[in-house]
Length: 91
Image (tube, rainbow, N blue to C red; front, side, top):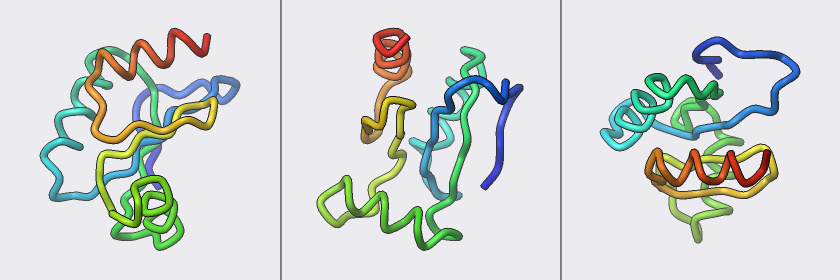
């Protein structure tokens, strides 16, 4: 698990499940970085528990990026606008 960006330990974390080869994951990471949104990235190819979690919220599929929000909800391949809206709604 890699922590990406400036992370405030008191701040609830956004978690993004990804793979190295996923172009949608690379795009979302770039957009999160540009927006200054801190997140934790977990590569499901290196973490079996993470892969099982992704499967559990995606009907058995390992669809990435899967984003886990601080409130426990998830989004599959969300746009940056969807991520921002979900974070603002939870604030």
